[in-house]
Amino acid sequence: MYYFLDAERNVYAFAKASDAREGLSPVTEAEALAIAAGPSPEVDYPALIAAERYKREGVGIAVDGYAIDTSRDGQALIAGAAVSAILDPDYKCNWKTAAGFVERNAPQLVEIATAVRAHVQACFDRERELLLAVEAGEFQVEMLAEGWPDSIPESAPDPVPETEPDTEAAPQ
Image (cartoon, rainbow, N blue to C red; front, side, top):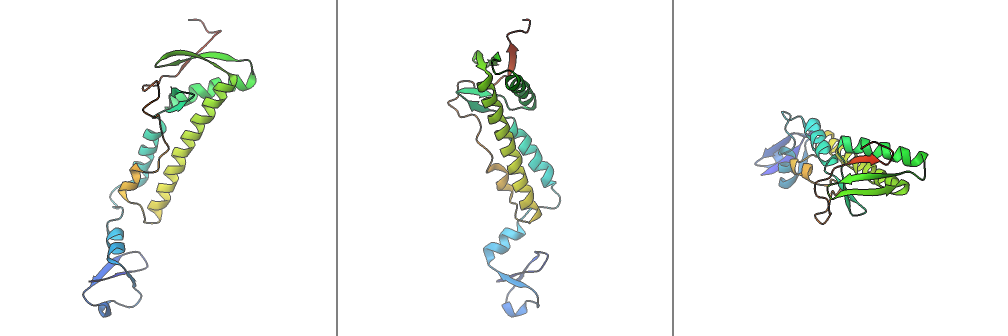
C-alpha cells in the first residue's frame, strides 16, 4: 500500500503509487496512521486540555520540605502572605500544613509564593504547548498525560496540603 497526504492533511491509500493524483505528497505508513488517528473533531480538545491544566495546577508542590497547596484558594492565600512579606521584611506568620503549624518569615513566604507561581505558570505553558499541537494537527491523546510540571514528591511530609495562614496578630 502507498500512502499520500493532501494540503489539508487528508490521508489517501493506493495499491499502486501511480494511482495517486497529482498534488499529493507521499508519506510513510507510520506517518499516515499517525495523521489518520489524530484528534477527533467531535472532542473539544481545548476544553479537555484546560481541564487537565486546572487539575495539574492544583495538585500542590513541596517547598522546604513542606507540602504547599496550589489550588486557587492556596494560591490566593500565599499571594496575600507574600505581599505582606514584601511590604514588611520582618513579617512572620504561622502557616498551617497537614503536619501542623510552621512559622514562616518574609523570605520564606516569598520563596513559597515564587515556587507556587512557577508551578502554576509551568502548567499554563504546558497547556499552551498542547493547544499549539492541536492547532498544528499533531496532538495525540497520550500527550495529555505527559510534560506537566512535577508535583509533591511522595517523600514530602504533608501529602494532603492545607494552607491557612494564621498571622500572629490575628485573633484565634
